[in-house]
Length: 355
Image (cartoon, rainbow, N blue to C red):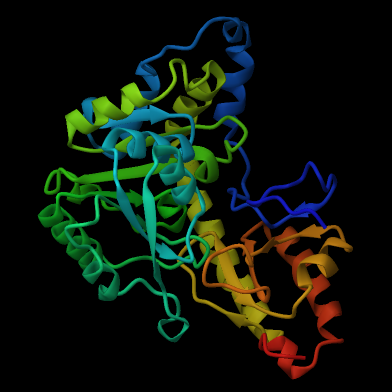
């Protein structure tokens, strides 16, 4: 069976209930929908290449200056730009993590070294990772929360990485695409302390704008941001993406409601999976990583439910899966399907061991 490299392959599997992509279960904000309809006549024009209104909205949302913001066509665009701008020879990232870091490095001709997170540590990023940053490292990727584990990285470890990277002359790319849905704040306070820091975020998951491709980079390093701007294509952020992005960021109540929903449903879904005897990692994000029976992806797909198999993540095998946190009704469908399937599991399969 052919599998999409990332989640969200609803085109190969139309009509499925999609738990494979970590998109806000509340869906696109109504304000964004209205902005798209009202701005329809403007789609015939070229977009503002500087994304001025979007940049202003991001700066206001992040409590930063506009010159510290670079609007991009999604986080993937930002990762590619920082690699092309920084021109690293050797980069460092944890495993398991998002495959987009490796793709960005390949585009820039950089070698990526992997630091394997340990199962014994619950796949948490520890000081061991900071210790891997030496004079040969030019670029460091950190995800907070990490994907697919959903685990936050402590500020102390992020700070250790930044200090070691600064000594090595390396840039740190901090991927905080899921931090807003997780709640509790991000790492913006570190931007003015460390000029070697670039924070990448996206409206893709937080505001359910995946199809519009809206992301951004934050940094106090104006020279690096300027190089990143030059590294991308002109008119990268489309007219509808800019309109929806501005409207979403200005919808003050949407994010708070989203955080409440995700926190409530994450706890409920995690408890249900644990109740079925599955090995579920604790998560701070809008998704859960768990270990279960081999072939669970195919079994659920036959029931028109799509989850994310994690066997193509470094450090994980074919018994690891990721599921997004969805609405109460959608989560109930997943829990119900797993409950039926679990009746045929033995203890080894429940724990992810050999059947």
